[in-house]
Length: 101
Image (cartoon, rainbow, N blue to C red; front, side, top):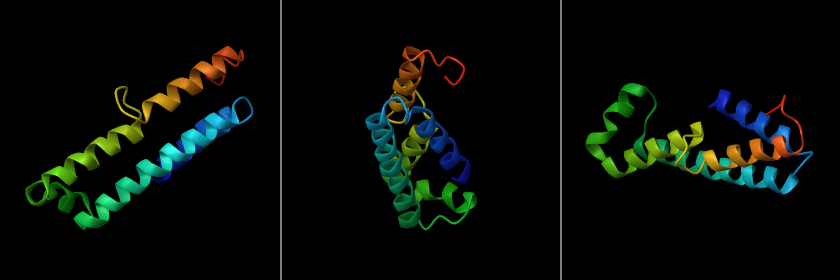
């Protein structure tokens, strides 16, 4: 999660000068996804990947939500985490900041 937080801070710092409301939207989406992930991990009592692999047997729905949340944090296209990144790249390109995008 530390690397994910650093990467999201990079996305937010890249857009803050061009579109501050977009940065706030990105921050709120990141907070919502991170809270969902930590709440699911806490509920499943997952302290390691070996205990997380057994979570499917106890609570398949919550494990599916956790999987979708992790993929969304990674920015996979059909999920929520992809949209802010795509809009940030479009905003950077429209402001002729191709190198950062």
